[in-house]
Length: 254
Image (tube, rainbow, N blue to C red):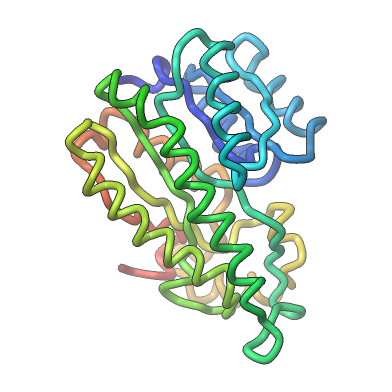
């Protein structure tokens, strides 16, 4: 299925990387569901950039199973066809602040649990909500957003990095089970993005270190990460599943 035939849900897409991913799908002609929790105004701005005829903003906390089910129902009703493609991007209550991060002495299990719910629990609910329609279509594309930090913890964000490592295991297990239904499940793991709301707290010297140690000598942009997400949704990736593509300018070579 070509991208312009797809209905794409991007969770947490009112701002930052999610907004760029949603906009990129819109540019390729897809119908796009802009999911948000609180930022209705920003979500509507993303819809306007894509075009009101091809995008809709729907509020839902993707950690809540009931809200996720309603999200899928509203999207199907609006576009008169089901979601074919899920991008699990939502970032729950986290800022990339290398100076004020939680350390071994201060991080709590509640911190870990909050990030695990935002990464794995949310992805589980969206896949469960979308699976039946994908099976009926014999087509589905699921792209989970990870990080290069669990492979190379330049900054040890203990709770966040661990949750994304768990998400990779989740990705590969889902890929193994759903492949028979022509549903692929992959992950795109970026480096620190230059610059989003989430990375705004990161000091410039951290960016400088990353640029110095990266072969391309630059920090990756949201637009560049969105390109790789589009690849996993496109026919060009039809034989690829269970993979983690690191998009960080070569800082981590897996």
